[in-house]
Image 1 (spheres, rainbow over the protein chains, first blue to last red):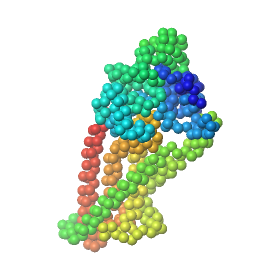
Image 2: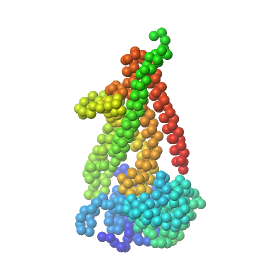
Image 3: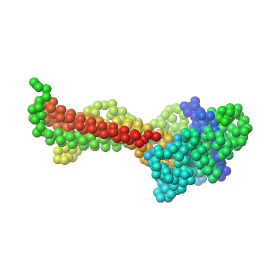
Length: 258
Length: 261
């Protein structure tokens, strides 16, 4: 049953390695609502990237559940409304979740336009002309329409990341996942990428953002999660987290990064 | 044996120049077909080795549907028969001499399988040439498999993650993202394998393939001159291999130039 209240419900999510001796995630429970801009912060090694990557199953969780539109996607098989056992369509699921990576991961052997139209054409079976038209419109939005014929190598880091964002948007996802999207950028390029993300947030896109940009978290996020040691230690509005941090761990973290 | 190399001996073998010309053609054809067969075989082997085919996977999944950690069942569930077969093939072919493999193919396999008895270009005996190509191709496939595997693994994992997160299937990812990049990277290595096979193919004269070495043997038998035909063969092999490898090195430099980020 698809519930309209939450887009993604994460329940007691665990990711253990080596028979439990390493616990990247140790029981995370959280709801992601439609239109949420959820910002995940925490020290490195806290499990925030693992959490994000688990959402579209780039990491296979070892315990717990993730309900996306009501279906537990951590199970390889599930029962549909008629009680029939169906195999989980991981590829179909991932189409609904756009992902943006720290290192952009553009395809270097393809032009910007080809990067953007590949998945719509091959996965959504969209016509080439239509896919290109949509891609160009998206590129125009981020001011890169004139670079459509270039290869990724010819772009700056900030431009690459803007392309990576609209490449994910070209699949018309229901939620966008950002894995430290500005961490690999030169400082002067961070702004242009954050601006694109702010624009997305204003349009009501559901976003989960792992970042070290506290300014972004404060300004754009409507909910902030603080993770440490694979646990979700504190969550709340940006004001709660930044002005009235409760746990000593968070207070210590904030004193270091702010 | 008063003189090491005699000019007069070269004039003795000169009438057999046609044999060397034919031998040159056979060597080139043999190497070309070997690389093609070897590459196709290697691609299949590499994909088998890297496949995620685990027929006993269900044994390692607990009641809740999660992967079990540790235990015999978890180990069995990770067993991949395709990868096992491919690995066994590669290791066996890399750990035994080529000449043994060629003899097994020629005297073993093709003594059971009857080959049509005709001659390519009017002189290449198919019944000898074909087993030679098969044996060398099987051997080179084992080596090229490792080259292709390294080429595929050299592609940044982020490429696969990006492709899969866009909804591309494993096959689509391989076809559109990984293989185009990997093959471009390993093209020089494949061309080098071609040069290696040109040299290695000399061994097929032992099963009667009429390559350059067999021309040497024929001339030796007819004229009782040994060293001079060998020198001619040396010159031919060198002229074939040296420029080719230099050419490859040139393109390798040029291609890596365009890749700098």
